[in-house]
Length: 97
Image (cartoon, rainbow, N blue to C red):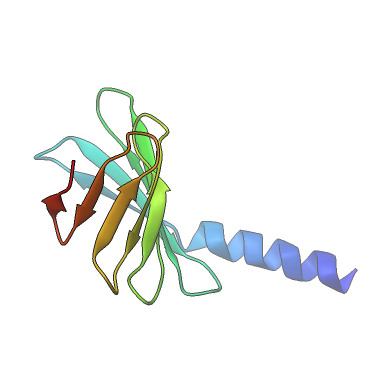
């Protein structure tokens, strides 16, 4: 019973602390929240119906999926971005393709 209450509390608090931001210049809406591990979770919605998500870890590493559902990751320590669906790789913003 206690485990169920704790899980319910974590679920409830994660919903309660979600915030929504609208960017009028791009027309995008962002819903973001922090989880119990300190990660920031961002869900993006464009005005044309596409969605994407990002998880930002406390150390700066990121992962998520783009509007086409392609999984990607970014290693903040070495500055490497990989999109595993498109094959795109960048180091410190420089396209290697």
